[in-house]
Image 1 (cartoon, rainbow, N blue to C red):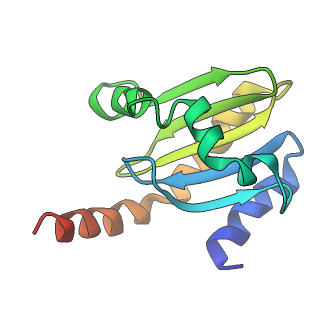
Image 2: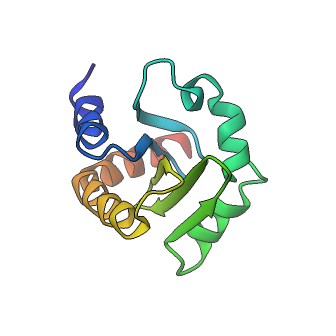
Image 3: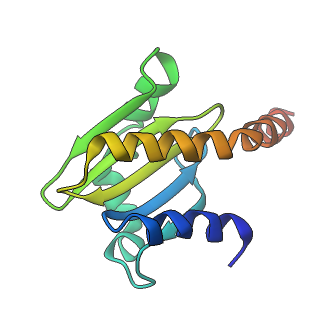
Length: 132
């Protein structure tokens, strides 16, 4: 595992109610991820899970985060709570158990976003390269 995945896995080890952490670009394409279990249903069914979580619903939820002053969404499902928060040039998606403390999940998201701050500069460079 690389250092970034190790960093994300530390959150999973520390907080038992977290199931998965995903860093994606503004289009919802995964950059980094960590899951509680190697054979997690979230990981195995990631495309389906992302669709259910709203990341691929015509990118409607990402557009809300991207084009408005709203910087986070919390989605409640039968088995998971999905928390999406916009960073500067990227998104953080946290999958947690349904009984998770949402305030703590939001606090964890804030900590992770601060740690990934330098990533926004790198993503901007990549996006600028793709424009040419």
